[in-house]
Image 1 (cartoon, rainbow, N blue to C red):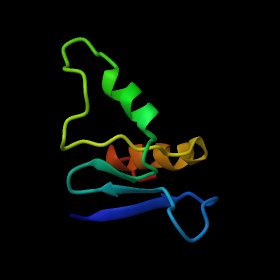
Image 2 (image 1 turned 135 degrees about the vertical axis):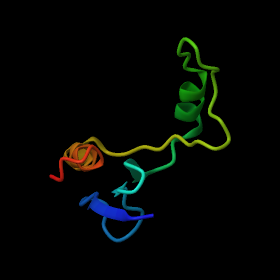
Image 3 (image 1 turned 120 degrees about the horizontal axis):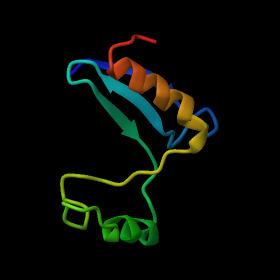
Amino acid sequence: MALRFIGIDPDTGQQGSPTVWVDEEKGELVLQGWRPDEKLEAECAAFEVPGHAPGIPPHEAVIRVPARMVPMLRKACDVAEGTGL
């Protein structure tokens, strides 16, 4: 895996910092974030999308990333698409 570091939440100090990377081989975003509380996870699990089963599959996770990291997420999306910003 060729991870390219994009950014880390500047407001979280030395511990528990949400982070954004791009896996350049797979063209995927890799995110580290906060775990949701039970209420939010249940709300996400109950959300219905046509053509998809409700719930969160065991191989997936819901994470929280602060909105202040939107610029990093945009950059990661650009990198994953190959624009190289």
